[in-house]
Structures are given as structure tokens and as C-alpha cells.
Length: 203
Image 1 (tube, rainbow, N blue to C red):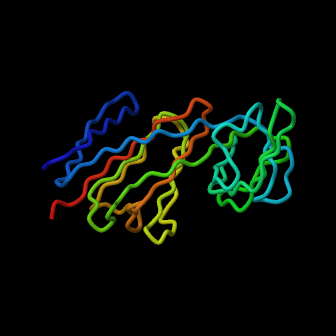
Image 2: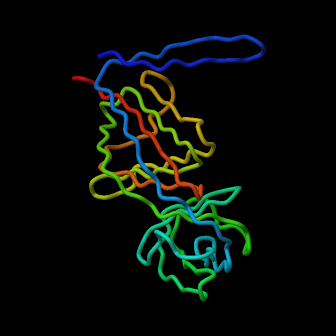
């Protein structure tokens, strides 16, 4: 089956249209993402360690969860939650450590923190002809093999600005190995919908 992506260039007052066509089995997967919770980095004890104070209840976040922390200039992903302490009924302190990505911001900086949501997603990198990822909010997707081991992490830095790859170009496939699961998160307190599109070779 033939599948295609239409690309429009609107530059310098002119418009160009191009169509990328790839044969194979097409798949579209939509993933619901937990809503992030707003707070601030109350205490910073290291580049990957700190205390995030969130307003109100701890929501979907619980001890032993993994979370992603977002702020204006960066993101740290796959952080472990070691403890959650209630400050009366007004806020909770969430201790995070062991993440990767950007160094945590300065103490007192505004952040959002989001529990990761895991989904089954079997991608065959060697058979992939086309790949796209998109989200209606700033978001992240962490792809893991069956081992499990991280294959790659992709951040959608701007809502509704998708990443697109197709084969037979000089650009490397962002999915560098076979995957079994994907863990998703977002920066928005409204949650998000993250969509992954891919075409596998029909042979």
C-alpha cells in the first residue's frame, strides 16, 4: 500500500508543495498523556537531584513513579520519585533524582512535573520507511527495547510542530533500534495527546 506525507513550504512570498510517498504497512498510534502539575524547584541539591513543591494534592504522582520535569529553558526526564511529603493541605514536596537531560534549573524556578505513562509500541527500525511524532502540547517520548534499554528520547519542544523522518535521505532515523514500549509525558497541566505515525516495509 502506498502512503504519503504532503509538505508545504511557504517562504519568501512563494509556496512549494512536495509529496513524500512510501509503500508499506502504515500505523497511527495516539497516546493519552497524564496532566503535569505546576510547582517550583524548592530545593536544588545537584544537577539531577532536588525537591519539587507542587500545589495541592500529589495527583497522579506516587512514590516509586518515574517523572519528567519541564521548565522554560529545558527538561529532565526519567527522574525517580523517592518520597512525597505533604505540607498540610496546600502543597506536596516531591523528591526527584537520577534523571537525564538538561541540568535542573536554579532553586525557586517554576517547573511542571509529569508522571510518565507507558504504552506498548513495537517498532522495527530496520524495516521503517517513514516515522513521525506530534503532540498538541510540549511533550516527550522515551523509547525502550524489550531488554529494557533506552533506544532514544524525543522531545516535542513546540506543540503541533511534528518531527518527520523518511528513508533514503542523509538524515539518520531517530529510532536507532527496535522498540517494545514508549513512555510519554508533557509539560501542560491540561495533559496532552501524543501521536506517532510510522510505515514499515511490507516485505
